[in-house]
Each structure stands twice: as C-alpha cells, then as structure tokens.
Image 1: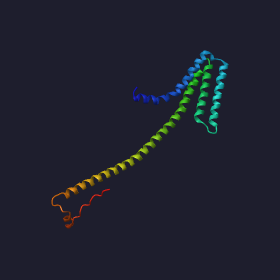
Image 2: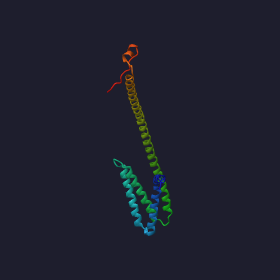
Image 3: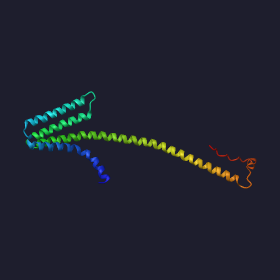
Length: 193
C-alpha cells in the first residue's frame, strides 16, 4: 500500500465510522432477535432500563458543575444504541429496526459533520498561525543572512586591502612619504581586533 492510499484511507476512516457503528448495532440486534429476544418482555425491559440509565448518566455528565462533553456524548450515544437495539430485537419484522437505523445513521452523520467542521477550522487556524510564525522567522533569518554576508564581504575586502598595501609596500622605489608630499592621502590601515 503506497503513501497516497494510506493517506486516503486515514482520511476516509472517520467518515465511515458512524455508518459502521449503527450498522453493527442493527446487525447485532437482528441476531439477538433471531436467538430469542423477539417478543421477550424481560429483554425489552432490560434494554429499556439500560437505555434510560445511559441517558441519565449523559444528563448527569452534561449538567454537572464541570460538564464533561465527551462523556455526555458517549452516554447519550450509548443510550440511543441500546434503544435502537431493543426495538430492533423485540420487533417481528426488520422494518422498525431499519427505520431506526436510518434515523440513527443520519443523526450520527449530522453530529459528526459538526465535529469534523470544527476540527477542520482548528486545523486550518493552526496551519495559518504556524505559517505566519514561519514568515516572521523567515524575515529574521533573511536579515541575519544579509548581515552575515556583509560581514564576510567586509572581511574579504579588508584582507584584499591589506594584501594590496603589502604588495604596494614591496614595490621597488615605493616611498610612502612621497605620496603624502604630493597631497595624496595615505591608505588607511585595516583595523585589527
């Protein structure tokens, strides 16, 4: 599997999760129905009690002093899944289960789309902030690069000037005092640190 296939699969997997989750609940409920849950009042009460318990847990998590959104969402999703499984397992025909499956799948995609959109906005904002930070650092890096080049060029010029002065001093018949007498200024000696 190449890099592009893996990237596509990574991006598509979360998009398939709501349909896989609701389909799994539907399939398990129909299997349970075929194995004796159909018209079993005890099983219906059990699933109803579990669904109500999960809903109450979701309300407690959502309305607490420090409401926990992820825990509340998980509890409400569990409550809905248990209710759908109970109705699907108790019914004679698969029609009520399929109807609830369709509603649950659409609802799951609606809620997931909101989450995906929020996540996309966060990722986009983070990417823009990082790009702005890179641009700010790129400017600083460019300035420092120009400063370093200027220092290297100045040093190279100083070395060339020093070599030229040494060469001039070594020429036969060169008299530095003759330059000053004629009014020509003497070349400045490079500073040494």
